[in-house]
Image (cartoon, rainbow, N blue to C red; front, side, top):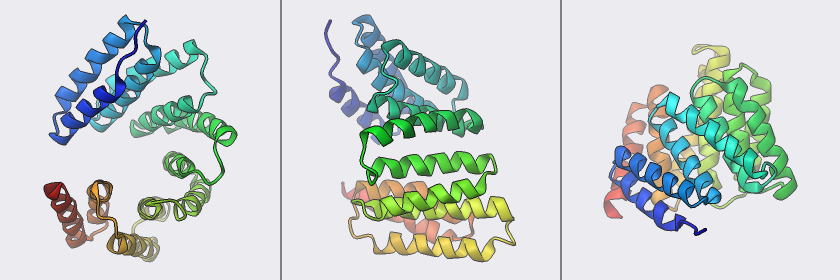
Amino acid sequence: MGRISTQRVLDKLDDYFSRNDYDGAERHLLYWLEEAKAIADRHSAILLLNELAGLYRKLSKEEKALETVADLLALIKEMGIENNIGAGTSFINCATVYKAFGKAEKALPLFEKAKSIYEKELSADDKRFGGLFNNTALALVDLERYDEAYELYEKAIGIMKNADDGDLEVAITYLNIASAKEAQLGAVESEETVRDYIEKSMKIFDEHENRDGYYAFVCEKCASVFGYFGYFLYEKDLEKRARDIYERS
């Protein structure tokens, strides 16, 4: 059996995303998923299911997202690769889908599976641990397990502050902590603490030197969080930074 050229598929997917053509992106992924199944290219099918799960999560299509997660987990089990490093990434993606649709209790066991794999396969300072800890902490906050969440946020910061471009991930983590503090303490009681973390995050955004596409993506992703906390001018500023970078590229 042959193999699909996944890089070409992903390049075309990026093209759809660059034009915000999410319907086209879905059709593209579904077409190639069927091709992968037709030639029994299960490794490509796993990649495509991961992309589909992420797309449906982004578009808030709960039913399709959960169906895709079920298919992805079943295929990993069928292939017997549940301890593979790639499976760890899939477990995180599936867990993130569960968390996005209010199923944090189903997300945590998958995050734990990913953690077990990462601990065996990666060095303790690998950047991927930062993302894992951040995402796990978000699920813990949903379950009101705040102390556990803060511990993971601090671990994520410790890893990301030493990674390339990791300061932006630290900025995101500060915003996550601010949101957790508000959820735990309420808007009034958390006001001073929230302001401290918001200002720490702003400092990173302002001092970050590499104003590339990834910086634009993070600005765009985080702008609304600043707006939520009342930093409306800064929200607009981050949106403009992202827009200017995209227009130059």
